[in-house]
Amino acid sequence: MTTAIMHRRRVFDTIGPLLETQTTTIGELLDTPRRLTATVRSPIDVPGFDNSSMDGYAVAASTLRRADQSSATDAQGRAQTVYGPIPVHGRVAAGALGNEVTAGTAVEIMTGAPLPPGTDTVIRIEDTQPGEFESPEITITLPSADSGPQPGAFVRNRGSDVRAGTTILSAGLMLTPAHLGVAAACGVKALEVQSLPHVLIVSTGDEITADAAAGIHDANSITLAASLRRLGVDTRIITVPDDPQALLDAVRGARSDLVISTGGISKGAHEVVKLAADLDPESTMVFQPVAMQPGGPQGCGTLAGTAWVALPGNPVSALISFEMFIRPALLGLDVDEEPRETEYHRLLGGLDEAPPSGKLQVRRAVMTDDGLELVGGSRSHLLHNYAQSTHLVFIPPTDAEPEGNEPHIRSGDRLKTWKIT
Image (tube, rainbow, N blue to C red; front, side, top):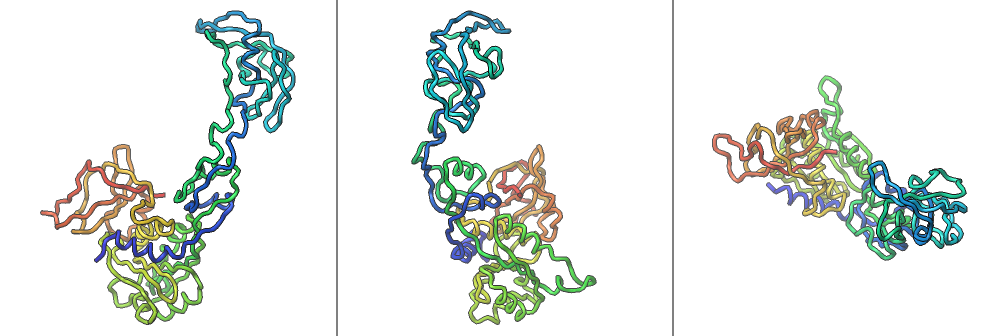
């Protein structure tokens, strides 16, 4: 029996060679998270010019200091200074360049518009009278200050977000919407990201190809395809009965980069993936149980000339195995990198059963206001409970059987979790 970390390394080594680097436009990265493979530096300053953060008027601070001034108080009795009247000439809209503003005058300016020459300050329209655009002159009311109006009010300075040459994205990042937005703001049109293999999902077993009286509906292909496609992976689904030669023929005809199969790797008499590996003299498949519950039976290697990861057939086992082993490998994450954001939360009520000795137990839970409430037990066929859950909870293994079936995890203990998305 091997550990979950050791098997994750094995799966990473199987999938890793299929991952390549490709240059992809930002528009093609909107729907799927991808891993950045090259560090990106900004070619420009952002903002590229001093601009207004408000709708109002651009002036020189010195214009206000030299203007006629009178005293006033606001509704709370605080001292204010009224400047003006100040003549207004013209308007600068976002995307336009304004003419130089003569000392002693102001110009209307819209949010995002470049500060025209001769100005260094923006006055909000709500701080002016009559408080509406297209007025020939305005008065400005501001809180009184000993130093008077200072340059820079409501101005976004050039390069205040990013300076040219600054590293904006580091290789290895999982790209988020904000990362893509920063790249776009800096004029970067494309990024070098990790490509993804074409995956063939194979659900095995006579039970999913049988008639209604003896068969079951195939959920594994749906859960796996949905999980893969949300990573941007191109997938195809086939179902194969417990016929090892039919399995080999189907996979060889599909021409995929990677096969992910479910079922056929346990200890039964009709374990079709194991039997197919026995038929294929070039197979490198390793079938070894992992010290994990659920998801103990696992296999990976090459079969039918294709990289192959074999998952157990029970639906919860398959889905947890995908999260534990396949998802991180497809994201290019090494074994010391978490594929999901890790949080620690308090367990409510303790464990309802002791985990097997030496096995990592991955349970489903719902997050409540008071903490984690386990649902569904450890059994691997309870997919409905998985669908109701909000978190995967990791119960660490013990080195020995607990005395009197007493769990080593108790109510109030803080446990590692991944949020289910």
